[in-house]
Image 1 (spheres, rainbow over the protein chains, first blue to last red):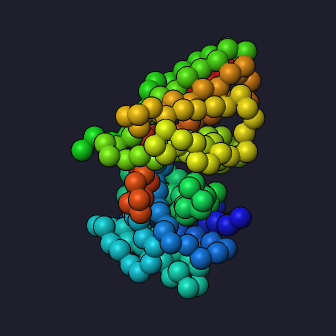
Image 2: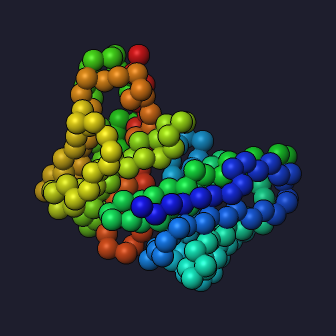
Length: 107
Length: 111
């Protein structure tokens, strides 16, 4: 089955810094989502991005489907950005998740 | 537009008991899928229901079951609870290529 790998596994930033999270997938996909898991456990949808680039405020994402990777950019990070970031791809009716990147933003 | 609603938010059960969790999808969404999240195993797929039919099932024992009603609300049941069933259970609703939206989750603790 399709494999999804995220890097780095952990990231510590000072408030105001920028960061890039990466998601590699082993096969072609027709969709990819980025989620932020908040401290209470809910997965918040950040981007639905099968290809191309999207931006939402300080966050943006780029998926290069032909090269099987996606990037999530966080600019001017804030302490509220802390948490776990997951990418996930759909495969035969289910989402395949990466192992996540745990981001800690220090004040 | 209301989001995905999961109830209850927290549960504490004793080994050997059974538990039922509920998920109400976004209005108009016919697909509901369930995931288990544990620190060691990450997010793992349990099953997916579409229009009252189970379409996909993950690699979990038969103690884990589910169903979907005609209004698309779904329930999952875990019988004969084990300590290892302690986890966050998340459900997601989807429709077509619109992507998945998750509920707030049910945190189950088995003691």
